[in-house]
Amino acid sequence: MTEFTDELLKDAEERMHKSVEACRHELATVRTGRASPHLLDRVSVDYYGTETPLKQLSQVAATDARLLTLTPYDKNSIKAIEKAIMESDLGLTPNNDGNVIRLQIPELNEERRRDLVRIVHGVAEEGRVAIRNIRRDVMHDLRELKKEGEVGEDDERRAESELQRQTDEAIGEIESLLKGKEEEILEV
Image (tube, rainbow, N blue to C red; front, side):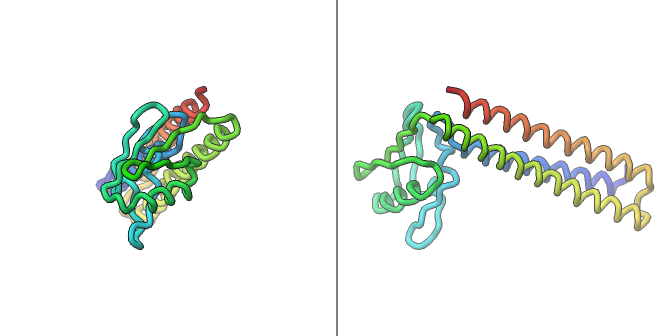
């Protein structure tokens, strides 16, 4: 293959890898029955008029299987942190003693489990769409190179099949992440 196609394929592979990692991170923030500090990754707090990620305002620890404790760096931010958690889609109720916020992770009921499975399917679909968009863009670039005479038809075909292999691999990775997260959610 030519230098142009190699560069396009390398770029596609990097972008697909980033999409898979973004999907992995997003799936980690979906709540399961266990306490994980990652649950709060998507929560941002209105801190003196600025939307600030929760993990920049407090230390988050999973003190046992069903309890998260947040120790704010600034005690004056406790009310704002509690408000942000209440308004998030996590369905958790914060309790504080003036210094520490405790989040009890309740058992998941069957209906909530189904909702969470729907959410993770949506996250995985966003990941698959991102991968397919990368493939579409690179296919377009390959056709442009062929049209301009930079690469021959054989090189374009080889690059397209390599691109399809990368796409299938990335989507397969997202599928296995989804399967693992689904099992984790449905585990009683």
